[in-house]
Image (cartoon, rainbow, N blue to C red; front, side, top):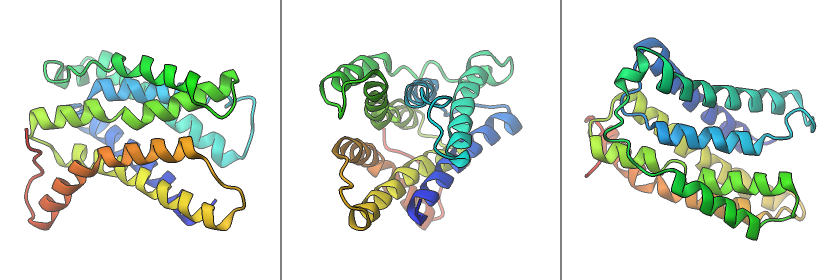
Length: 215
């Protein structure tokens, strides 16, 4: 554990709390992509298959439970809560997210560190997480009217991955033989997808204007 890893985890946790705050207090999921939330649920389910068989630390187990529980609860709220689901913009959230799942799984079968079930599923979760934000970014471009909580949620998600890259750089120079190309490349691709959003986010912050993305 180092300061960059801890900051990344806390930023990731903050993004989830912001989204849950929006859903629970405002009873709205407007501007939030259900497709992205479903992809994240698949990501965490595939990544944490070892949650009850491989104990690393209490911190690690608690974080796994939080991300698993929150991802599935958000999907449930958006799909089935009688008030929240009314605010879901299904007409705009039309990204065919299932087309991302199969290519990521096939890629995990072809490119992995070890050919075991858990390792392939872990690699699959890395590839899928790298592109899971795409439906959300497309939805924001289509709606253009982005509320503060949704904007903060996406910003925190991107910041979490950026902090993890700093964590990898730090560990590369401080730990012997710390080389994980699959994790690094997936994380870099994921971070680059946020580049356009970050630009307009900081522009809106600098000019004290409401966040808008170009169509």
